[in-house]
Image 1 (cartoon, rainbow, N blue to C red):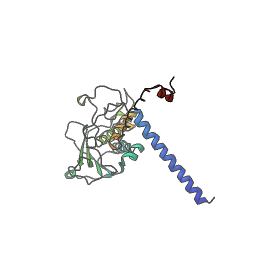
Image 2 (image 1 turned 30 degrees about the vertical axis):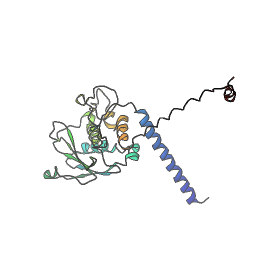
Image 3 (image 1 turned 180 degrees about the horizontal axis):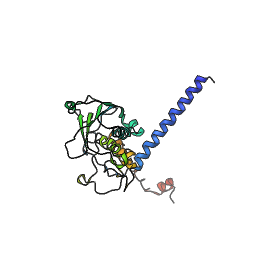
Image 4 (image 1 turned 90 degrees about the vertical axis):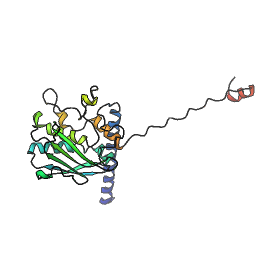
Length: 253
């Protein structure tokens, strides 16, 4: 057997193993998260609204006025959305993460399609962040700006910006904040749409682990909805025999 043939066989085996791993991860996520009540969708009627156009290769840029630890946290948290099961299903991925200079007068400019820009600028909503998405005619996200309050401290042992990197991007997948005002008062499902971990009363790995199973399940439902198995029609009962001959032919005595 030639070396070329052996190499091709090895590549085919590796590709097959990769497909099996992706399938197992996809199915285990769906099965384990079927009972997730949270997070909910920002648009629960048409869940594709406020989510990226399928197969968008998103180029991410980060304002170069973020300090090194903040920029690294945003990138790490954002990259967690490159989950293999999600990318395989939606085709949406995030890359680039180049730090760029943004002039003050350019903070309100609309980015080109396929671009996500992290801006070190006041969101002016009384919070630490806001997502400003551009959508197409059917409400799918084509580009976005995410403003982060410049004075927001990288708390929780330097993991808060990891949390922001994952949490804010989740809004571009139509996921809603999991707070009491949105009806998220019950349930114990871990979701990145809840508040961050302080690293003291709860582990800061919550901030750094990216989207949780329930977050992934909700996004998978947008891009790869499961088709329910049709209910088979009932089998009609056999017609009871009417004569002695019928009884004998049915095997009845």
